[in-house]
Image 1 (spheres, rainbow, N blue to C red):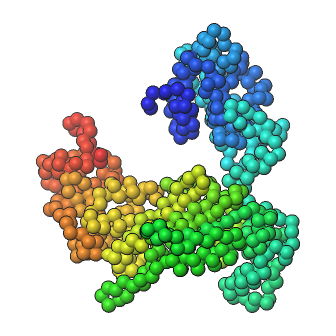
Image 2 (spheres, one colour):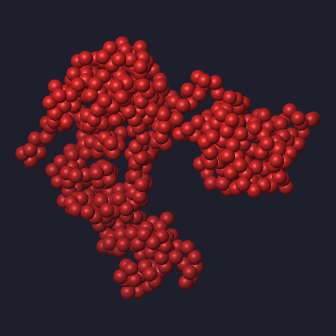
Image 3 (cartoon, rainbow, N blue to C red):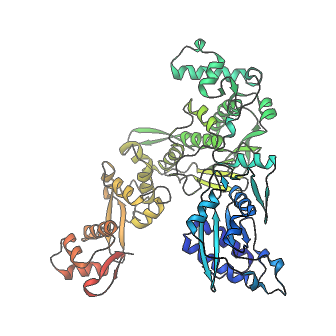
Length: 581
Protein backbone atom coordinates (compact mmCIF):
# COMPACT_ATOMS: atom_id res chain seq x y z
CA UNK A 1 0.00 0.00 0.00
CA UNK A 2 1.35 3.51 -0.82
CA UNK A 3 2.07 5.80 2.13
CA UNK A 4 -0.88 7.74 3.50
CA UNK A 5 -0.94 11.41 2.61
CA UNK A 6 -3.45 13.06 4.90
CA UNK A 7 -7.15 12.73 5.60
CA UNK A 8 -8.39 11.93 2.12
CA UNK A 9 -6.09 8.97 1.53
CA UNK A 10 -6.93 7.50 4.91
CA UNK A 11 -10.64 7.70 4.28
CA UNK A 12 -10.22 6.20 0.82
CA UNK A 13 -8.28 3.39 2.49
CA UNK A 14 -11.06 2.86 5.03
CA UNK A 15 -13.68 3.00 2.30
CA UNK A 16 -11.96 -0.01 0.75
CA UNK A 17 -11.71 -1.92 4.03
CA UNK A 18 -14.71 -4.08 3.18
CA UNK A 19 -12.86 -5.46 0.18
CA UNK A 20 -10.02 -7.00 2.18
CA UNK A 21 -9.64 -9.84 4.69
CA UNK A 22 -9.24 -9.02 8.38
CA UNK A 23 -5.46 -8.96 8.40
CA UNK A 24 -5.61 -6.25 5.75
CA UNK A 25 -8.24 -4.36 7.75
CA UNK A 26 -5.93 -4.35 10.75
CA UNK A 27 -3.03 -3.08 8.63
CA UNK A 28 -5.15 -0.16 7.36
CA UNK A 29 -6.32 0.75 10.87
CA UNK A 30 -2.73 0.51 12.10
CA UNK A 31 -1.82 3.23 9.59
CA UNK A 32 -4.75 5.33 10.76
CA UNK A 33 -3.71 5.03 14.40
CA UNK A 34 -0.25 6.31 13.46
CA UNK A 35 -1.90 9.40 11.96
CA UNK A 36 -3.96 9.96 15.12
CA UNK A 37 -0.77 10.47 17.10
CA UNK A 38 -0.20 13.64 15.08
CA UNK A 39 -3.69 14.96 14.25
CA UNK A 40 -7.07 15.39 15.99
CA UNK A 41 -9.49 12.51 15.56
CA UNK A 42 -12.27 14.77 14.32
CA UNK A 43 -10.22 15.32 11.14
CA UNK A 44 -10.87 11.70 10.19
CA UNK A 45 -14.39 10.98 11.37
CA UNK A 46 -16.76 10.80 8.41
CA UNK A 47 -19.91 9.22 7.06
CA UNK A 48 -18.14 5.83 7.23
CA UNK A 49 -15.90 6.21 10.28
CA UNK A 50 -16.64 6.80 13.97
CA UNK A 51 -14.33 6.79 17.02
CA UNK A 52 -15.55 5.82 20.51
CA UNK A 53 -14.02 5.69 23.97
CA UNK A 54 -15.25 3.58 26.90
CA UNK A 55 -13.66 3.02 30.29
CA UNK A 56 -14.66 -0.66 30.36
CA UNK A 57 -16.43 -3.41 28.47
CA UNK A 58 -19.42 -2.96 30.76
CA UNK A 59 -19.76 0.72 29.91
CA UNK A 60 -19.60 -0.13 26.21
CA UNK A 61 -22.44 -2.65 26.50
CA UNK A 62 -24.50 -0.17 28.53
CA UNK A 63 -24.16 2.49 25.84
CA UNK A 64 -27.34 3.08 23.83
CA UNK A 65 -25.34 5.52 21.71
CA UNK A 66 -23.15 2.71 20.33
CA UNK A 67 -26.19 0.75 19.14
CA UNK A 68 -27.51 3.89 17.44
CA UNK A 69 -24.16 4.43 15.72
CA UNK A 70 -24.31 0.86 14.37
CA UNK A 71 -27.88 1.39 13.15
CA UNK A 72 -26.85 4.63 11.43
CA UNK A 73 -23.89 3.10 9.61
CA UNK A 74 -25.87 0.02 8.53
CA UNK A 75 -28.65 2.18 7.08
CA UNK A 76 -26.33 4.59 5.25
CA UNK A 77 -23.11 3.33 3.65
CA UNK A 78 -21.72 0.97 6.25
CA UNK A 79 -18.42 1.71 7.92
CA UNK A 80 -16.20 1.23 10.96
CA UNK A 81 -16.38 2.11 14.64
CA UNK A 82 -12.98 2.07 16.34
CA UNK A 83 -13.13 1.85 20.12
CA UNK A 84 -10.29 3.16 22.25
CA UNK A 85 -9.98 6.69 20.80
CA UNK A 86 -10.69 9.71 23.00
CA UNK A 87 -12.57 12.72 21.62
CA UNK A 88 -10.02 15.30 20.45
CA UNK A 89 -11.90 18.08 22.29
CA UNK A 90 -10.81 16.47 25.57
CA UNK A 91 -7.11 16.67 24.69
CA UNK A 92 -4.95 19.45 26.15
CA UNK A 93 -1.99 21.23 24.56
CA UNK A 94 -2.65 19.50 21.22
CA UNK A 95 -0.88 16.40 22.46
CA UNK A 96 -2.86 14.22 20.08
CA UNK A 97 -1.13 11.04 21.18
CA UNK A 98 -3.33 11.24 24.30
CA UNK A 99 -6.27 10.29 22.06
CA UNK A 100 -4.89 6.76 21.80
CA UNK A 101 -6.12 5.42 25.13
CA UNK A 102 -6.90 1.85 24.00
CA UNK A 103 -9.56 -0.59 25.17
CA UNK A 104 -9.49 -3.75 27.24
CA UNK A 105 -9.33 -7.16 25.58
CA UNK A 106 -12.73 -8.81 25.28
CA UNK A 107 -14.40 -12.02 24.12
CA UNK A 108 -14.99 -11.19 20.43
CA UNK A 109 -17.69 -13.81 19.78
CA UNK A 110 -19.65 -12.96 22.92
CA UNK A 111 -19.47 -9.22 22.22
CA UNK A 112 -20.58 -9.76 18.64
CA UNK A 113 -23.66 -11.67 19.86
CA UNK A 114 -24.53 -9.07 22.50
CA UNK A 115 -24.30 -6.19 20.03
CA UNK A 116 -26.30 -8.06 17.37
CA UNK A 117 -29.00 -8.76 19.95
CA UNK A 118 -29.52 -5.01 20.48
CA UNK A 119 -30.47 -4.56 16.83
CA UNK A 120 -33.73 -5.33 15.06
CA UNK A 121 -33.49 -7.44 13.06
CA UNK A 122 -30.34 -9.07 14.46
CA UNK A 123 -27.47 -7.94 12.32
CA UNK A 124 -24.18 -9.59 11.54
CA UNK A 125 -21.16 -7.49 12.52
CA UNK A 126 -17.45 -8.15 12.12
CA UNK A 127 -15.21 -7.47 15.12
CA UNK A 128 -11.42 -7.53 15.31
CA UNK A 129 -8.82 -6.37 17.81
CA UNK A 130 -5.73 -4.36 16.87
CA UNK A 131 -2.53 -4.09 18.89
CA UNK A 132 -0.81 -0.72 18.53
CA UNK A 133 2.16 0.39 20.62
CA UNK A 134 1.24 -1.83 23.55
CA UNK A 135 -2.46 -0.94 23.60
CA UNK A 136 -5.51 -2.83 22.36
CA UNK A 137 -8.22 -1.35 20.11
CA UNK A 138 -11.54 -2.80 18.98
CA UNK A 139 -12.75 -2.38 15.40
CA UNK A 140 -16.45 -2.94 14.68
CA UNK A 141 -17.09 -3.25 10.96
CA UNK A 142 -20.74 -2.55 10.07
CA UNK A 143 -21.77 -3.70 6.55
CA UNK A 144 -24.40 -1.66 4.71
CA UNK A 145 -27.79 -3.33 5.02
CA UNK A 146 -29.24 -4.07 1.59
CA UNK A 147 -32.53 -5.80 2.38
CA UNK A 148 -33.95 -4.26 5.57
CA UNK A 149 -33.68 -1.21 7.78
CA UNK A 150 -31.64 -1.80 10.92
CA UNK A 151 -33.20 -0.34 14.08
CA UNK A 152 -32.35 -0.54 17.75
CA UNK A 153 -34.49 -2.95 19.77
CA UNK A 154 -36.17 0.18 21.08
CA UNK A 155 -37.43 0.85 17.54
CA UNK A 156 -35.14 3.76 16.66
CA UNK A 157 -33.97 3.87 13.01
CA UNK A 158 -30.83 5.99 12.68
CA UNK A 159 -28.91 7.44 9.74
CA UNK A 160 -25.46 8.88 9.27
CA UNK A 161 -25.18 12.51 8.14
CA UNK A 162 -21.58 13.59 7.76
CA UNK A 163 -19.82 12.83 11.04
CA UNK A 164 -23.03 12.55 13.06
CA UNK A 165 -25.57 9.80 13.67
CA UNK A 166 -29.20 10.74 14.31
CA UNK A 167 -32.73 9.29 14.29
CA UNK A 168 -34.31 9.26 10.83
CA UNK A 169 -37.46 11.33 10.35
CA UNK A 170 -40.42 9.89 8.36
CA UNK A 171 -39.40 11.18 4.92
CA UNK A 172 -35.84 9.89 5.47
CA UNK A 173 -37.18 6.48 6.47
CA UNK A 174 -39.27 6.42 3.29
CA UNK A 175 -36.16 7.21 1.24
CA UNK A 176 -34.20 4.46 3.03
CA UNK A 177 -36.92 1.90 2.33
CA UNK A 178 -36.92 2.78 -1.36
CA UNK A 179 -33.16 2.27 -1.52
CA UNK A 180 -33.37 -1.33 -0.24
CA UNK A 181 -32.80 -4.18 -2.67
CA UNK A 182 -35.98 -5.89 -1.48
CA UNK A 183 -38.07 -2.78 -2.20
CA UNK A 184 -40.23 -2.90 -5.33
CA UNK A 185 -41.46 0.49 -6.48
CA UNK A 186 -43.67 -1.03 -9.16
CA UNK A 187 -45.56 -3.16 -6.61
CA UNK A 188 -47.01 -0.21 -4.68
CA UNK A 189 -50.80 0.02 -4.88
CA UNK A 190 -52.61 3.09 -6.22
CA UNK A 191 -56.04 3.72 -4.75
CA UNK A 192 -57.79 4.67 -7.99
CA UNK A 193 -60.23 2.96 -10.36
CA UNK A 194 -58.23 1.54 -13.29
CA UNK A 195 -61.09 2.45 -15.66
CA UNK A 196 -60.32 6.14 -15.11
CA UNK A 197 -56.57 6.03 -15.60
CA UNK A 198 -55.75 3.36 -18.20
CA UNK A 199 -55.40 4.05 -21.92
CA UNK A 200 -58.35 2.22 -23.48
CA UNK A 201 -56.63 1.57 -26.81
CA UNK A 202 -53.47 0.27 -25.14
CA UNK A 203 -55.55 -1.91 -22.80
CA UNK A 204 -57.50 -3.35 -25.74
CA UNK A 205 -54.34 -4.10 -27.75
CA UNK A 206 -52.53 -5.62 -24.77
CA UNK A 207 -55.52 -7.83 -23.93
CA UNK A 208 -55.74 -9.01 -27.54
CA UNK A 209 -52.06 -9.94 -27.50
CA UNK A 210 -52.55 -11.79 -24.21
CA UNK A 211 -55.50 -13.74 -25.63
CA UNK A 212 -53.49 -14.81 -28.68
CA UNK A 213 -50.55 -15.97 -26.57
CA UNK A 214 -52.84 -17.92 -24.25
CA UNK A 215 -54.98 -19.22 -27.14
CA UNK A 216 -58.21 -17.97 -25.58
CA UNK A 217 -61.17 -16.04 -26.98
CA UNK A 218 -60.71 -12.37 -26.19
CA UNK A 219 -64.38 -11.85 -25.31
CA UNK A 220 -64.14 -14.55 -22.66
CA UNK A 221 -61.87 -12.48 -20.43
CA UNK A 222 -62.86 -9.21 -18.78
CA UNK A 223 -60.56 -6.23 -18.43
CA UNK A 224 -60.31 -6.78 -14.67
CA UNK A 225 -59.49 -10.48 -15.08
CA UNK A 226 -56.86 -9.67 -17.68
CA UNK A 227 -55.17 -7.07 -15.46
CA UNK A 228 -55.19 -9.49 -12.54
CA UNK A 229 -53.68 -12.23 -14.71
CA UNK A 230 -50.70 -10.17 -15.84
CA UNK A 231 -50.06 -8.72 -12.34
CA UNK A 232 -51.15 -5.14 -13.10
CA UNK A 233 -53.69 -5.41 -10.28
CA UNK A 234 -53.86 -7.40 -7.07
CA UNK A 235 -57.31 -8.17 -5.71
CA UNK A 236 -58.63 -5.54 -8.09
CA UNK A 237 -56.28 -2.79 -6.90
CA UNK A 238 -54.06 -1.23 -9.56
CA UNK A 239 -50.31 -1.03 -8.86
CA UNK A 240 -47.68 1.38 -10.16
CA UNK A 241 -46.35 -1.19 -12.61
CA UNK A 242 -49.80 -1.61 -14.15
CA UNK A 243 -50.33 2.13 -14.49
CA UNK A 244 -46.88 2.56 -16.03
CA UNK A 245 -47.55 -0.27 -18.48
CA UNK A 246 -50.98 0.79 -19.74
CA UNK A 247 -51.84 4.17 -18.18
CA UNK A 248 -52.80 7.43 -19.79
CA UNK A 249 -49.78 9.70 -20.05
CA UNK A 250 -51.34 12.51 -17.98
CA UNK A 251 -52.36 10.05 -15.25
CA UNK A 252 -48.84 8.59 -15.13
CA UNK A 253 -47.47 12.10 -14.61
CA UNK A 254 -50.11 12.85 -11.98
CA UNK A 255 -49.71 9.69 -9.90
CA UNK A 256 -46.16 8.47 -10.61
CA UNK A 257 -43.94 11.20 -11.99
CA UNK A 258 -42.67 12.62 -15.24
CA UNK A 259 -41.00 9.71 -17.05
CA UNK A 260 -39.93 10.87 -20.50
CA UNK A 261 -38.57 8.96 -23.48
CA UNK A 262 -36.34 10.22 -26.24
CA UNK A 263 -35.17 8.86 -29.59
CA UNK A 264 -32.57 10.79 -31.57
CA UNK A 265 -30.81 9.90 -34.80
CA UNK A 266 -27.68 11.71 -35.94
CA UNK A 267 -25.62 11.32 -39.08
CA UNK A 268 -21.85 10.96 -38.98
CA UNK A 269 -21.55 14.69 -39.78
CA UNK A 270 -23.78 15.56 -36.81
CA UNK A 271 -27.00 16.35 -38.68
CA UNK A 272 -30.06 15.55 -36.56
CA UNK A 273 -32.42 13.42 -38.64
CA UNK A 274 -34.75 12.48 -35.80
CA UNK A 275 -35.29 13.88 -32.31
CA UNK A 276 -38.53 12.91 -30.62
CA UNK A 277 -39.36 13.32 -26.93
CA UNK A 278 -42.57 11.99 -25.41
CA UNK A 279 -44.31 10.78 -22.25
CA UNK A 280 -46.52 7.71 -22.48
CA UNK A 281 -47.13 4.24 -21.11
CA UNK A 282 -44.71 1.40 -21.77
CA UNK A 283 -47.01 -0.40 -24.22
CA UNK A 284 -47.25 2.63 -26.53
CA UNK A 285 -43.59 3.52 -25.98
CA UNK A 286 -42.40 0.10 -27.13
CA UNK A 287 -44.52 0.38 -30.25
CA UNK A 288 -43.26 3.91 -31.02
CA UNK A 289 -39.61 3.10 -30.33
CA UNK A 290 -39.79 -0.02 -32.50
CA UNK A 291 -41.09 2.09 -35.39
CA UNK A 292 -38.39 4.75 -34.96
CA UNK A 293 -35.67 2.12 -34.72
CA UNK A 294 -36.91 0.37 -37.87
CA UNK A 295 -36.85 3.68 -39.73
CA UNK A 296 -33.18 4.34 -39.02
CA UNK A 297 -31.89 0.76 -39.03
CA UNK A 298 -30.54 0.51 -42.56
CA UNK A 299 -30.98 -2.81 -44.38
CA UNK A 300 -28.72 -4.31 -47.05
CA UNK A 301 -27.98 -7.69 -48.65
CA UNK A 302 -24.74 -9.64 -48.49
CA UNK A 303 -24.29 -12.28 -51.20
CA UNK A 304 -21.99 -15.28 -50.77
CA UNK A 305 -21.78 -18.48 -52.80
CA UNK A 306 -25.25 -18.05 -54.26
CA UNK A 307 -26.94 -17.23 -50.96
CA UNK A 308 -28.17 -13.74 -50.08
CA UNK A 309 -28.11 -12.70 -46.42
CA UNK A 310 -30.19 -9.80 -45.13
CA UNK A 311 -28.19 -7.52 -42.82
CA UNK A 312 -28.98 -4.48 -40.67
CA UNK A 313 -26.94 -1.64 -39.25
CA UNK A 314 -27.81 -2.97 -35.78
CA UNK A 315 -29.32 -6.30 -34.87
CA UNK A 316 -33.00 -6.05 -33.92
CA UNK A 317 -32.70 -8.53 -31.04
CA UNK A 318 -29.70 -6.77 -29.52
CA UNK A 319 -31.53 -3.43 -29.53
CA UNK A 320 -34.79 -4.95 -28.28
CA UNK A 321 -33.04 -6.56 -25.30
CA UNK A 322 -31.07 -3.42 -24.49
CA UNK A 323 -34.14 -1.19 -24.55
CA UNK A 324 -36.28 -3.51 -22.44
CA UNK A 325 -33.43 -3.91 -19.98
CA UNK A 326 -33.42 -0.12 -19.54
CA UNK A 327 -37.21 0.01 -19.01
CA UNK A 328 -37.27 -2.77 -16.43
CA UNK A 329 -34.19 -1.72 -14.45
CA UNK A 330 -34.45 2.07 -14.46
CA UNK A 331 -34.98 3.78 -11.12
CA UNK A 332 -38.55 5.10 -11.15
CA UNK A 333 -37.99 6.89 -7.86
CA UNK A 334 -36.28 9.51 -10.00
CA UNK A 335 -37.90 11.63 -12.68
CA UNK A 336 -35.84 11.57 -15.83
CA UNK A 337 -35.52 10.51 -19.42
CA UNK A 338 -34.84 7.12 -20.94
CA UNK A 339 -33.03 8.03 -24.14
CA UNK A 340 -31.86 6.30 -27.29
CA UNK A 341 -29.14 8.12 -29.22
CA UNK A 342 -28.46 6.53 -32.58
CA UNK A 343 -25.27 7.40 -34.44
CA UNK A 344 -23.95 5.83 -37.61
CA UNK A 345 -21.48 3.58 -35.82
CA UNK A 346 -23.15 3.02 -32.43
CA UNK A 347 -26.36 3.24 -30.47
CA UNK A 348 -26.42 4.46 -26.87
CA UNK A 349 -29.28 3.71 -24.46
CA UNK A 350 -29.32 5.73 -21.23
CA UNK A 351 -31.67 5.47 -18.26
CA UNK A 352 -31.82 7.06 -14.78
CA UNK A 353 -30.54 5.12 -11.80
CA UNK A 354 -27.57 3.05 -10.73
CA UNK A 355 -26.66 -0.63 -10.90
CA UNK A 356 -28.73 -2.73 -8.55
CA UNK A 357 -28.40 -5.86 -6.44
CA UNK A 358 -24.61 -6.22 -6.56
CA UNK A 359 -24.46 -5.97 -10.35
CA UNK A 360 -21.87 -3.74 -12.01
CA UNK A 361 -20.45 -3.18 -15.47
CA UNK A 362 -17.89 -5.95 -15.00
CA UNK A 363 -20.09 -8.80 -13.71
CA UNK A 364 -23.37 -8.01 -15.45
CA UNK A 365 -23.01 -10.86 -17.94
CA UNK A 366 -22.79 -13.62 -15.31
CA UNK A 367 -24.25 -12.17 -12.11
CA UNK A 368 -27.50 -13.69 -10.88
CA UNK A 369 -30.25 -11.51 -12.45
CA UNK A 370 -31.81 -8.91 -10.15
CA UNK A 371 -35.02 -7.04 -10.96
CA UNK A 372 -35.34 -3.66 -9.28
CA UNK A 373 -39.00 -3.47 -10.38
CA UNK A 374 -40.18 -7.05 -9.90
CA UNK A 375 -43.89 -6.45 -10.54
CA UNK A 376 -43.18 -4.53 -13.74
CA UNK A 377 -40.82 -7.32 -14.83
CA UNK A 378 -43.55 -9.89 -14.18
CA UNK A 379 -46.01 -7.92 -16.34
CA UNK A 380 -43.52 -7.80 -19.22
CA UNK A 381 -42.74 -11.50 -18.77
CA UNK A 382 -46.36 -12.29 -19.61
CA UNK A 383 -45.60 -10.98 -23.10
CA UNK A 384 -42.21 -12.69 -23.25
CA UNK A 385 -40.66 -9.22 -23.42
CA UNK A 386 -38.46 -9.95 -20.40
CA UNK A 387 -36.87 -13.35 -19.83
CA UNK A 388 -37.33 -15.09 -16.47
CA UNK A 389 -33.85 -16.59 -16.68
CA UNK A 390 -32.15 -13.22 -17.14
CA UNK A 391 -30.90 -14.03 -20.64
CA UNK A 392 -31.30 -10.51 -22.00
CA UNK A 393 -27.65 -9.51 -21.57
CA UNK A 394 -26.53 -12.79 -23.12
CA UNK A 395 -28.74 -12.25 -26.17
CA UNK A 396 -27.49 -8.68 -26.53
CA UNK A 397 -23.92 -9.97 -26.53
CA UNK A 398 -24.48 -12.89 -28.89
CA UNK A 399 -26.39 -10.79 -31.39
CA UNK A 400 -23.58 -8.25 -31.48
CA UNK A 401 -20.66 -10.68 -31.61
CA UNK A 402 -22.10 -12.81 -34.41
CA UNK A 403 -21.65 -9.83 -36.76
CA UNK A 404 -18.10 -9.27 -35.54
CA UNK A 405 -19.17 -6.27 -33.47
CA UNK A 406 -17.85 -5.42 -30.02
CA UNK A 407 -19.52 -6.57 -26.85
CA UNK A 408 -22.05 -4.08 -25.46
CA UNK A 409 -20.59 -1.93 -22.69
CA UNK A 410 -22.43 -1.00 -19.48
CA UNK A 411 -21.21 2.09 -17.62
CA UNK A 412 -22.59 3.74 -14.49
CA UNK A 413 -22.43 7.53 -14.74
CA UNK A 414 -23.70 10.19 -12.32
CA UNK A 415 -26.75 10.74 -14.51
CA UNK A 416 -27.54 7.02 -14.91
CA UNK A 417 -26.62 3.79 -16.69
CA UNK A 418 -25.32 4.01 -20.24
CA UNK A 419 -25.34 1.01 -22.60
CA UNK A 420 -23.41 1.28 -25.86
CA UNK A 421 -23.69 -1.15 -28.78
CA UNK A 422 -21.55 -1.02 -31.90
CA UNK A 423 -23.49 -0.57 -35.15
CA UNK A 424 -22.83 -0.89 -38.88
CA UNK A 425 -19.46 -2.64 -38.44
CA UNK A 426 -19.50 -6.08 -40.06
CA UNK A 427 -17.00 -8.95 -40.25
CA UNK A 428 -18.13 -11.10 -43.12
CA UNK A 429 -16.14 -14.19 -42.11
CA UNK A 430 -17.48 -14.25 -38.56
CA UNK A 431 -21.03 -13.79 -39.82
CA UNK A 432 -20.75 -16.56 -42.41
CA UNK A 433 -19.27 -19.08 -39.98
CA UNK A 434 -22.00 -18.42 -37.43
CA UNK A 435 -24.78 -18.42 -40.03
CA UNK A 436 -23.67 -21.24 -42.28
CA UNK A 437 -21.44 -23.61 -40.34
CA UNK A 438 -21.55 -23.19 -36.55
CA UNK A 439 -25.07 -21.90 -36.04
CA UNK A 440 -25.38 -22.51 -32.29
CA UNK A 441 -22.47 -20.38 -31.10
CA UNK A 442 -22.51 -19.07 -27.55
CA UNK A 443 -20.60 -16.12 -26.13
CA UNK A 444 -17.40 -18.15 -25.64
CA UNK A 445 -17.26 -19.37 -29.23
CA UNK A 446 -18.06 -15.92 -30.57
CA UNK A 447 -15.38 -14.27 -28.46
CA UNK A 448 -12.84 -16.84 -29.66
CA UNK A 449 -13.77 -16.22 -33.30
CA UNK A 450 -13.62 -12.44 -32.94
CA UNK A 451 -10.32 -12.50 -31.02
CA UNK A 452 -8.48 -14.28 -33.85
CA UNK A 453 -9.96 -12.24 -36.68
CA UNK A 454 -7.20 -10.81 -38.91
CA UNK A 455 -4.49 -11.43 -36.30
CA UNK A 456 -4.71 -15.19 -36.89
CA UNK A 457 -3.98 -16.10 -33.26
CA UNK A 458 -4.73 -15.21 -29.63
CA UNK A 459 -2.63 -16.12 -26.62
CA UNK A 460 -4.64 -18.55 -24.50
CA UNK A 461 -3.83 -16.77 -21.23
CA UNK A 462 -4.90 -13.43 -22.71
CA UNK A 463 -8.11 -15.00 -23.96
CA UNK A 464 -8.76 -16.50 -20.53
CA UNK A 465 -8.31 -13.06 -18.96
CA UNK A 466 -10.71 -11.49 -21.46
CA UNK A 467 -13.43 -14.10 -21.02
CA UNK A 468 -12.91 -14.15 -17.25
CA UNK A 469 -14.49 -10.69 -17.16
CA UNK A 470 -17.69 -12.17 -18.56
CA UNK A 471 -18.05 -15.63 -17.07
CA UNK A 472 -16.78 -17.70 -14.19
CA UNK A 473 -14.41 -20.66 -14.82
CA UNK A 474 -13.22 -19.27 -18.19
CA UNK A 475 -10.46 -21.88 -18.66
CA UNK A 476 -12.85 -24.83 -18.60
CA UNK A 477 -15.32 -23.06 -20.86
CA UNK A 478 -12.67 -22.18 -23.45
CA UNK A 479 -11.23 -25.69 -23.63
CA UNK A 480 -14.66 -27.32 -23.77
CA UNK A 481 -15.69 -25.05 -26.63
CA UNK A 482 -12.49 -25.53 -28.65
CA UNK A 483 -12.60 -29.32 -28.31
CA UNK A 484 -16.30 -29.83 -29.07
CA UNK A 485 -17.98 -30.49 -32.41
CA UNK A 486 -18.47 -28.67 -34.69
CA UNK A 487 -16.39 -25.78 -33.35
CA UNK A 488 -13.15 -27.78 -33.31
CA UNK A 489 -13.35 -28.10 -37.11
CA UNK A 490 -12.68 -24.35 -37.43
CA UNK A 491 -10.21 -23.48 -34.67
CA UNK A 492 -7.31 -25.24 -32.99
CA UNK A 493 -4.57 -24.76 -30.39
CA UNK A 494 -0.95 -24.26 -31.42
CA UNK A 495 1.99 -24.13 -29.07
CA UNK A 496 5.54 -22.86 -29.25
CA UNK A 497 8.20 -21.59 -26.87
CA UNK A 498 6.33 -18.32 -26.24
CA UNK A 499 2.97 -19.82 -25.28
CA UNK A 500 -0.24 -21.52 -26.39
CA UNK A 501 -2.44 -19.86 -28.97
CA UNK A 502 -5.92 -20.25 -30.41
CA UNK A 503 -5.78 -20.12 -34.21
CA UNK A 504 -8.13 -20.70 -37.14
CA UNK A 505 -7.50 -23.92 -39.03
CA UNK A 506 -5.54 -23.22 -42.18
CA UNK A 507 -8.35 -23.86 -44.63
CA UNK A 508 -10.43 -21.14 -42.95
CA UNK A 509 -7.75 -18.43 -42.87
CA UNK A 510 -9.52 -16.59 -45.68
CA UNK A 511 -12.72 -16.34 -43.59
CA UNK A 512 -10.71 -14.61 -40.87
CA UNK A 513 -8.76 -12.46 -43.34
CA UNK A 514 -5.51 -13.92 -41.99
CA UNK A 515 -2.55 -13.09 -44.23
CA UNK A 516 0.28 -14.09 -41.86
CA UNK A 517 -0.80 -17.23 -39.96
CA UNK A 518 1.07 -18.48 -36.90
CA UNK A 519 3.33 -21.39 -37.99
CA UNK A 520 2.63 -24.77 -36.44
CA UNK A 521 5.84 -26.01 -34.78
CA UNK A 522 6.89 -29.67 -34.77
CA UNK A 523 6.63 -29.80 -30.97
CA UNK A 524 3.34 -27.87 -30.83
CA UNK A 525 1.41 -30.78 -29.28
CA UNK A 526 4.09 -31.18 -26.57
CA UNK A 527 3.66 -27.55 -25.57
CA UNK A 528 -0.13 -27.93 -25.48
CA UNK A 529 0.08 -31.05 -23.31
CA UNK A 530 2.54 -29.34 -20.97
CA UNK A 531 0.38 -26.23 -20.63
CA UNK A 532 -2.83 -28.18 -19.96
CA UNK A 533 -1.13 -30.39 -17.39
CA UNK A 534 0.28 -27.46 -15.41
CA UNK A 535 -3.01 -25.62 -15.71
CA UNK A 536 -4.82 -28.61 -14.22
CA UNK A 537 -2.29 -29.72 -11.60
CA UNK A 538 -0.61 -26.37 -10.90
CA UNK A 539 2.86 -27.93 -10.52
CA UNK A 540 4.96 -30.92 -11.57
CA UNK A 541 8.57 -32.12 -11.42
CA UNK A 542 10.74 -33.23 -14.36
CA UNK A 543 10.03 -36.91 -13.88
CA UNK A 544 6.25 -36.51 -13.95
CA UNK A 545 6.42 -34.24 -16.99
CA UNK A 546 8.77 -36.55 -18.88
CA UNK A 547 6.28 -39.36 -18.49
CA UNK A 548 3.29 -37.18 -19.36
CA UNK A 549 4.94 -35.70 -22.47
CA UNK A 550 6.14 -39.08 -23.70
CA UNK A 551 9.85 -38.28 -23.70
CA UNK A 552 12.38 -41.06 -23.21
CA UNK A 553 15.06 -38.93 -21.59
CA UNK A 554 15.20 -36.26 -18.92
CA UNK A 555 17.41 -34.17 -21.20
CA UNK A 556 14.75 -33.81 -23.88
CA UNK A 557 12.20 -32.88 -21.23
CA UNK A 558 14.51 -30.29 -19.66
CA UNK A 559 15.26 -28.81 -23.06
CA UNK A 560 11.55 -28.18 -23.76
CA UNK A 561 10.91 -26.82 -20.27
CA UNK A 562 13.84 -24.42 -20.27
CA UNK A 563 12.88 -22.97 -23.64
CA UNK A 564 9.21 -22.57 -22.69
CA UNK A 565 8.82 -18.89 -21.78
CA UNK A 566 5.44 -19.51 -20.16
CA UNK A 567 6.84 -21.78 -17.42
CA UNK A 568 8.99 -21.11 -14.38
CA UNK A 569 11.08 -23.43 -12.22
CA UNK A 570 11.12 -23.15 -8.43
CA UNK A 571 13.20 -25.09 -5.96
CA UNK A 572 16.52 -26.87 -6.24
CA UNK A 573 17.70 -30.29 -7.30
CA UNK A 574 15.18 -33.07 -6.67
CA UNK A 575 12.71 -30.66 -5.03
CA UNK A 576 12.46 -28.39 -8.06
CA UNK A 577 9.07 -28.08 -9.75
CA UNK A 578 7.64 -26.38 -12.79
CA UNK A 579 4.77 -23.90 -12.80
CA UNK A 580 2.98 -21.67 -15.28
CA UNK A 581 4.07 -18.05 -15.00
